[in-house]
Length: 513
Ligand SMILES: Cc1cc2nc3c(=O)[nH]c(=O)nc-3n(C[C@H](O)[C@H](O)[C@H](O)COP(=O)(O)O)c2cc1C
Ligand code: SF4
Image (cartoon, rainbow, N blue to C red; front, side, top):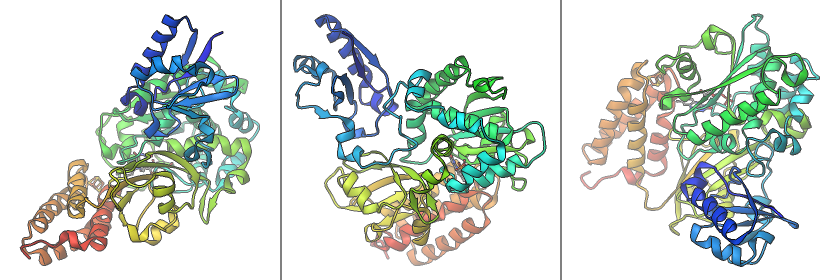
């Protein structure tokens, strides 16, 4: 009898040796006369246990991890093909507390299915949202998305339904749906994980978006640093065409939707939506002046939906299970679930999808298990390189849009990067300014010039030169960046700088002052 095994082809698992583990299982199985079928799934998001192998047994899927190629003969000897005991045996993934307590809606199938099999996808509820959408008109689909309370997961948290309604209301024959898969924020990997583990959910979300607003063409804009996500998503698109879910007759409905994935050239600013559109048009990634909004004049001047991977991938479950089902998760105006990405100096890094509202403390200690170094956690940065630094005294804050805004921070794309007490916050503040200087598109003066001058001022502060005057100068400059920048790159650079100054002033006082 052939035994089915799952070995992730997720980039994180691959970086930890999953390819060699798959080869060792195949080789040991063949040599021992055991028939094995290896499915290359996505990651379940428990990264400290990768490469995590799951074996399909009569008692369900049993996980082992982290598996090394050297451990494979011992696993066979212990009878792991039928779920045998072994020091690396973890049991069913669903029983591991880190996973068990999650509320996986968007990531329900990630790590569970063969990412490029339409059959596996459908057997696990895939395309149910699309089939429901095909019974509705555009207004009703947009209403469902609006009623669900879904807000953009790319960073700005703008209500997705309102954006779609604007595109729907444009009376032109050509509209587009674009997916922002640039995922440039530090410590974020939810888009990548979804595209590597369940890209058909993204494809489904984009088809629903197209049908809702009357767009027949979609583009996914993926970052060049994600070759595995690009490969898997392209294979999923091809499989969806083959199965008749993409093309001129979506699921036999007579409606058309075509989808193509394009790869950027590698620039943080190409994640900003108007730069992304420029880049998709084949131009240099430079921010456009708004208005007009992309929803009115976007790609090639036509009304365009621009949504993040996770926003679009959250739409199928909203259509399949209803707006109220999704809305019932979360708190206040932060509805639904958020796939949080926990990274940096933390013992158990990974992806945790839960309803909005969990505290930072719970995330860091219940899930993360504290710092990897064993030292006290001094700060976290949430929302990418331009997110605020949050001190331990504010770790009771809830992970929702409003609660974080209330302490001058932001949730962004849900990436949380952990720092222990060896971090120098002055150097981190300098890093933010240098990052802005390097990644600036150059279109507006506060960001183009201000970030470079800011880095120089910070260097003087860190060297202890005329500290007080230079800190005042830096605060002034931050105000200019905040209010005078054309886009969020310059506009948000003050967040890490000002939060570091506010919460960690001791790191800015130098011996020479
Ligand atoms: C400098 C900068 C970088 C950004 N990078 C990304 C990104 O990598 N991915 C993303 O989805 N949104 C990014 N955004 C936000 C987008 O401009 C836009 O708000 C988002 O793609 C809209 O999708 P959503 O409403 O689904 O979040 C960035 C914004 C700025 C200012
Ligand atoms: S803030 Fe920076 S990145 Fe944004 S438009 Fe201005 S120069 Fe370009």
